[in-house]
Length: 355
Image (tube, rainbow, N blue to C red; front, side, top):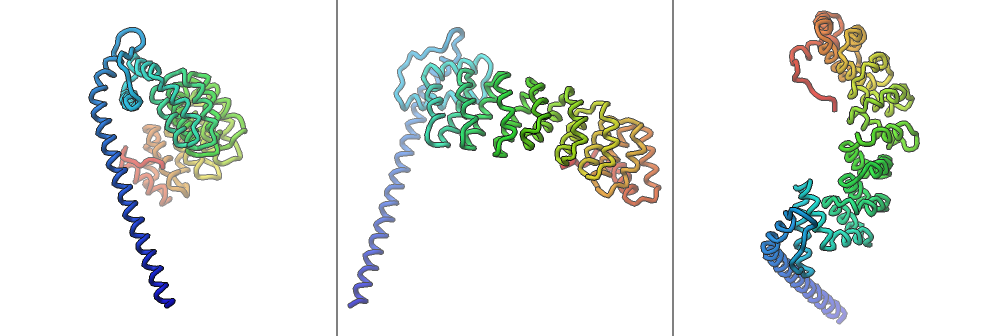
């Protein structure tokens, strides 16, 4: 009898499980059917509304008018059309898209979504506002870069870069020191595009010890942007005891290529860290001074391959004197120097890049 009871229980469990599977399958089928119907309706309405949207956007004067009434579903369709247009169109047409987006109340809806409970919804709202590029949404986006959700801060940093004025870009600098690497990198990408507008603020931040990681990214930006006004700061940072700051400073100096870096690069070839020696040799390849030939010739015997490589490149950039030094190295006693000279002379301009 107990065995029969157990079997009965198992049979009931199996039937319940089978029923649950069937119910779940029906729910999934229903969901897919509804989604297919909604998508079909959206395509139909988009085909009808797209010409009206294009006509409204292309109006020559005044804000775009909306002489047609929209249902809630139609507003969603028009919103998608405008966001796709905003990806490709800028200038006067972009402003017309933003004006139409605002006249439909979609800007206000996106600003409200920035206060949504879901972090994903807030992030998507920030991205949409960045695509539309309406300046009046900047205060809301600046508040969003203080959001506790990493996704929202990252999206807001990008969006601010699309609509920011100079003051907003200065605010964005502090995100270089954000605890989240993805947020800090996003801010760095934005400033790599627009940082020339705020070189003075970037220099000030790079010289402050407030955030080490933020400072490293700011120093990197000085090189990316070729900020010539940063020479004095970089000269000082090239002597920092912090290895990473020293490497970033020498690398930025190499990118700027100012003649005032010649002697610091010579000293950098004697640094205890190979990364500094490598970037110093790279900087000397930019300057191409005959005064560097004796030091570069010694650097051909450096234990690190990358240092030897950039020393050889720098010698080649000097001209006749440097090429003569490479030729001399071919017959020298130092095997590393001889091999590197041969490597460079055989390959010419077909050389690898420093990772």
